[in-house]
Image 1 (cartoon, rainbow, N blue to C red):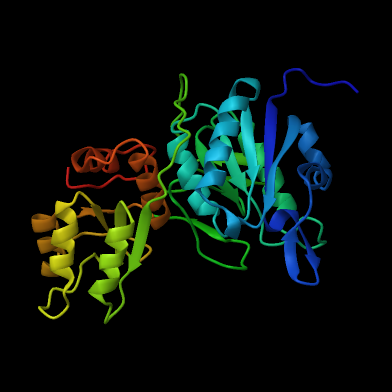
Image 2: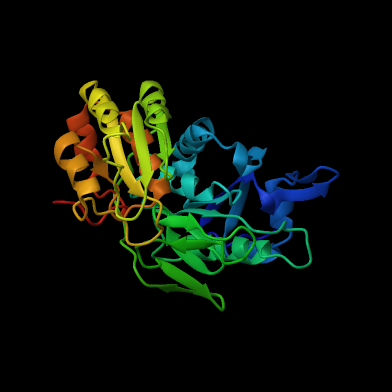
Length: 339
């Protein structure tokens, strides 16, 4: 067989997910190898030279920071030998993985593309074949770089993606940020792409001691107390622009003051998908920020907030340094802060 030596060399890293699944008595589970998946889209070999690495074969619900560290380590080891990477992944935690890799391999000159599907690749009617082909097509394109999700023809900044549908093929949206590109009719249409250059910086460690307290009407401050006792950082997922009940009988403020003095990291984000937080608007938010030093997510996705904290806390736990790093725009992950 003759090979076009001018073709780019891409490594496909298979991790499992729906795209690799077959149905059994207990439901869908990942069973196919990367090589099997590639056999369903033979046209990919016309785009590039492909190697396949089966790193794991799990439902993405089972992904943990250990798997993220392994992914980052693998990309670092293989980076000198390939022009880009396509990671096949389950959709349920794909946005978390793309955000994490955006920080573990920030501003990568070589593209790191993450994709998957809502239906297995061996079905007659499936989005898997198109998503996989589009991912390789984008990966070999001239302007491709950094960490991006390619799904349903959309190329989404890895730190801006969120899963919006559980079954719809248009599963992912870019939150508070334009699409990087689209893939249409076999062509990549670039909209917003900063071409990174130079040698990438690799990080391999995460600190998973990040807790999330979802605020609901009538939430008990004693629960928040337990979160602070257990985690190095607590993200409060609040309502609207961000705030915590300030009535005397709510009991939240003494708990917050106690743990802030002990060096815990406090972060406010919102349950609302679009527009982000703005704690300066209402008293229930402004007082928290002014008095207790809450950080806030602004226009970041929830997934990026969690990923960024895990990345930062593996480097430093000093509150002032955490604040500086959290508000630093790494990969267009946060564009609005208090300055």
